Amino acid sequence: MAGVAHVVGENIDKDKDKDEDEDEDGQDRAGVRLLPWAGPEGKPCYLIGGGEGGLISRMADATERVQLEMAAELLAHAADLLVDRRATSPQLRFLLARMTESLTDVRRIAVSRGAADHAR
Image 1: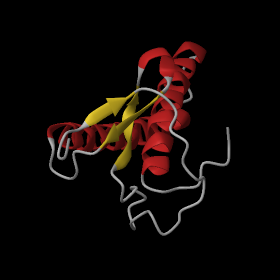
Image 2: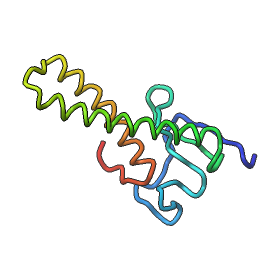
Image 3: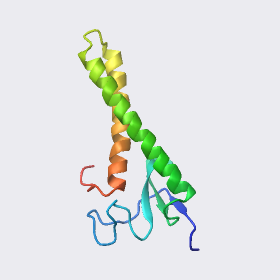
């Protein structure tokens, strides 16, 4: 069906390198987009079809904006906490855990936009 979006929570065999089937944002012209959240069992989740402006696409854009804003806030908080000599080990571990989550989100966004996915 044309114009119908499908969300798939599994791996899709895509070339690792950007080629002529991808636009400048790293999105497949055939309509496959890596979404900024994981599917069942932590597998990558893809949007097939639907194009720009669809509900799932808009949700993904909004989610990416929030994830990038949270990453910026975490960086600012980390800078403050690292210069604070009173920072405790539990505070630093908590910050590191949140930064790990954020880095995972930011990496997924980068891959979705066409960054090479060489590191595992």
